[in-house]
Amino acid sequence: MKKNSIKIAMYLNYFVFAILLNSVGIVILKSQKNYGVNEIQASILEAFKDLPIAIVSFLIASFLPRIGYKKAMLIGLGLVTFACISMYFGNSFDTAKLLFATVGISFALIKVSVYSLIGTITENQKEHNSLMSSIEGVFMIGIALAYFLFPAFNSETNADTWLNVYLLLAFISLLSFGFLFFAKFENQTQIPGVDLADDFRQMFKLFAKLLTIVFVISAFLFVMIEQGIMTWLPTFNDKVLHLPENISIMMASILAVSLAVGRLIAGQITKKINWIWVLVFCIISAMLIVLFVLPKTVGLKVTNINSLSDIPLIGFAFPLVGLFIAPIYPLLNSVILSALPKKLHSSMTGLIVVFSALGGTIGSRIIGWLFMNEGPENAFYFTLIPMTLLLVSFFILKKLTSKNEI
Picture 1 (cartoon, rainbow, N blue to C red):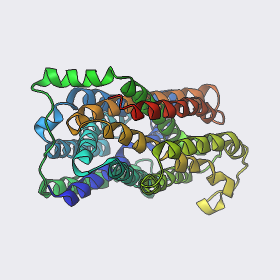
Picture 2: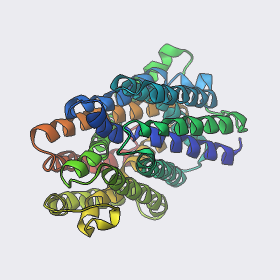
Picture 3: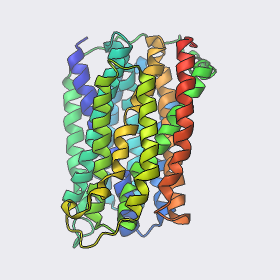
Picture 4: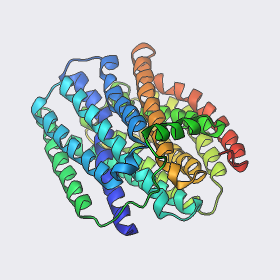
């Protein structure tokens, strides 16, 4: 098995899907302006993205090793290329729903494959932690690029020019397809079970363990926080800070960049510091930002904003919450996968993706509801609730993993 080829393929695929998946916040903002939908109607796009991820991951996670991770990733890239072209020609809210449903299905194939492959090319938990954090860091770099890519194609005089970005994304997807197709590596993952029924039994047996239950709740809570903030930050910038549309989108890139930096740094820190102390420091820091920085951002008065340089420094502060929540997701995933034999990584990844998708959908819907009913200036304060629950879950996970619960 050629580890470098596998790593490059994983990085490239995650980069492509980072742009597509996390453009949902941008498309939500564009849908309100171009397609005449309100906040709650627009938030359904998150469900069209995340529910297919959850459903497909649950159905195929255990079966995926049988068809091969490489083949699964090729199918995902092919579907996404078609979806991008359809969005360009469709140009409607319904086409946007179709786009994110297809992206969700495809990402389920990609994520289960990538997470399962990590276990085959790492030798211990520290290596696993490091590679997982690095891959998730590359994912965040792709997200950051999306916040500059879409404004580059946007025009205040022509409402449809932003759709040209999907022709570029279709081309990038085809390039990724080509690299993966010619990449030389073989799947050596141990195939679980003897049949499909046994595969599903393995997944449900995992879910019956207390460690697994605490973990999936933790993953659910984290993604609720991350996706809730990331999806609605462009709208927050538009409606609370009253920034121009392109500036609102580009400002959201600060969150993505801080997430990328946080995960890449965590990949190095966890080689020397135990994961529990890294996570405790991160979640407490994030809570302090919400408590003390967000109020100053909400109270910020901005006028005559024509570029990022015109925004007062405090306006950049709240998105830095990403720097501290960044390490949480990859480290949680690494902790649980490292506790399992490699033959069960695909089944466990299925559960990870299912509950992550549900957390993203519910988080976005809740924040969307809060934006409409409590006001956009108050919505993000409610993230303190899942943050507090997440802090408690870290110590429970530490206790259970030290006992080798699984």
